[in-house]
Image (tube, rainbow, N blue to C red; front, side, top):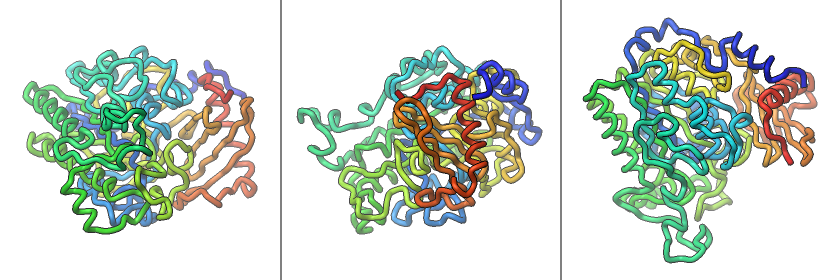
Length: 467
């Protein structure tokens, strides 16, 4: 360990990181126009769980069985980030990280954390610092054990302290069954009015957007959908469609595919409302998932192709299947049909939104993310400056950490006493598979360099270690 926390933060500030942003002349007209921002966060949707591939050279990372036309539309109308990552392989840590612009090493890698979001910089606080006229709302799943309410974090409207149970879990869907779980209850449920509360989340967001447009306030709305989380709930007519399609191509079920399409329909309602309000040209729409897809779903057939194929692993893991997710951006200055291969993460959104809203001053030394505005207008040659120059992932309770720099990714595995027990080095160019692709022995110097960078960062933020 070579760098102290103080030296590390000093380096970040000098480099323009940790809350410092640089203006991007290509977006100047947008910044002066006070753009609206619509953030769409789905739950447990993997990189391959779309009906169109995000990367042209990884065509197998999609499913012809699924139907996601509105998600596809966002990609066609804007930019597909082919190496977009959730900050964590689990829902609540990702939500904290997105909210505060932090890595899990800084703000906690599990449901429970000592990090109190309201005591730190947050997306709504940053937007209001950039322009006091911004109005912010959060609808849908807030998270488990988040400690702070959305309003305490700066939101003007929200659904409150919601979690998995709000959107439907065995105990809430089966109140008459003692100790209800996924093994003693139905594998799916029919709800023709409000499956997974997706229509309600959409309607709340639409009402808020209409109110702000009428009041001439720029807005930020985050719709954190409960779908396609573990308990499967869908409409009957959508399920009928997939029953006619026959056997799914992967380990998910017909009802799960129907739930995803019901969710896609709600995203279409959001996009349609932006058009109806006449604000689509001045609104950024960001779409991503809170973590990779689940390895199994209730009633699924594990003998079929894995749900995250061709990625290795699934939710809870720091292999690509657990953290590489759909990541789409549409908005002013973003070229339709463009793709960016630069790795980005959900914790980059806070500084990105701050810059889009016109913010230029220092926010906080605790922010790990950087603005990705240079990539939005120049996906091939735009530069983002990080310190360290990599994405960081940390889950000590599961005894692994990871670092992604350019095409390379290093996985570190920990002993119970907090020592490095083993490591694996991969190169994605662009093949994202990890199983059987470890190149540590072939490139030990690269593995050493990434390991040192990762360990230095973990020390600088006093990251939790395995115990």
